[in-house]
Image (cartoon, rainbow, N blue to C red; front, side, top):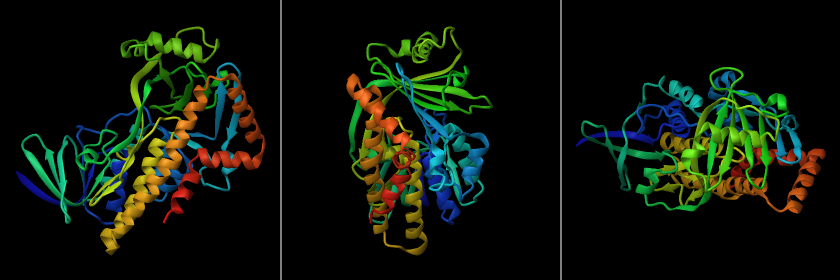
Length: 405
């Protein structure tokens, strides 16, 4: 078996893995990314970027590239199927808190080419596609990875390995790290249409509560204006995947969600159905292996926390790993990465995404009315409104993490 020595190996060429590699390469550290797929993948779920994420990516030029093709969303809505608009949130309230007082909508698969192009400009960085990881072991001094490169198995030995290979992470499993949590019983469906619902009164991002089938609306840039409207909904367990993936089902859901405002069928350009998990890895570090992104934590999509949190992992982790490699900093600093990012995921990302889901699907009429009254009260009070938006935009989560020592 051919054996090649590497400095750092990143497993997974998604946005988190590529960002980790880019940050290392920018600091002069040789890095190799291995990816099981033959090319960058298309994921039609994640696509909302919060202010602190844009701030983190700004110094390396990624935010400017994203802004050129993304949709700025300064207003988003809390709605209800029966009552209509409850609150429209104006993120300009955060103008003194962030350079980016808005959400940016951009499909994840349009971010990864930006990162890859930047990474490929460094001669000491490489991305190897069609190279699935088969096995991982480690000693006190190095990590050994067996990779299937199709002609023969290849063994890479590295000083450090970053596992950014998703919720089914082979890296995490090879390290025998428990993925603690649960899977929601219902599936989620994502569907997209070219039909523009903005004239019906919808902001580019709207969450609509309903005890039978809540809805999350997002306008995505797609290939060109006016873009696509994406809708995420929970799926009744009684309905098969085959039925969920039909245009008839999508149109039925759209018509119900728009509550009589849509009479004709509309063009459906994308549909998918998937399982949703709430899980956090028991450890984010095991000796010389570090986990980031979905390899370390997964959550339901309500609030747009998952991808953002993964990017926050990448920036936190690489800042510390650069210190270890380039300045011989004590490796204890990598345990600080675990404490900061795991704590935030347990106390913030998981709690808020679960709370968001439960509020949208609440069945008790009195509790629903209490929530509506609470949202209206917050939106009418500038202090409460700002605090709510600091949480929903993840600004508070970053400040909380930075306080952990």
